Length: 129
Image 1 (cartoon, rainbow, N blue to C red):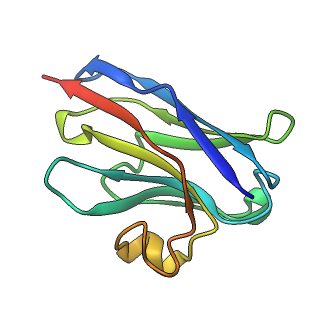
Image 2: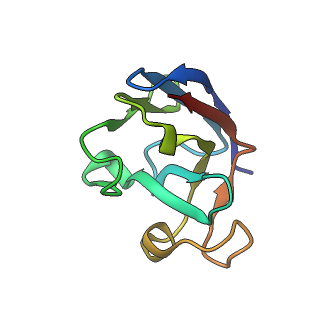
């Protein structure tokens, strides 16, 4: 059974940085598609960053490209999301998700969708202006 536990969220001023962590158990962090989704207040879920098996390809939504960076530590079996130059519109609940489809990543849906994969419980990020 795959389990994902997020940490590292918090409150930060605009322009600041945070690093989110996702501790993965039940499968190697690099064994398949894994990444981060978020739900901003009043909005739908959206995929923001993902990495495929072996780390050969990374995917970023345009709104975070150049500011957010994915990395993984195979020894610690942990996925990270380094977030810099944070903006108030980045305020959201951030979820670590594994084994979703790329179609779901780009077009999203809900965690109950058939190709949504496995979700963590989320960590809140609040960016103040």
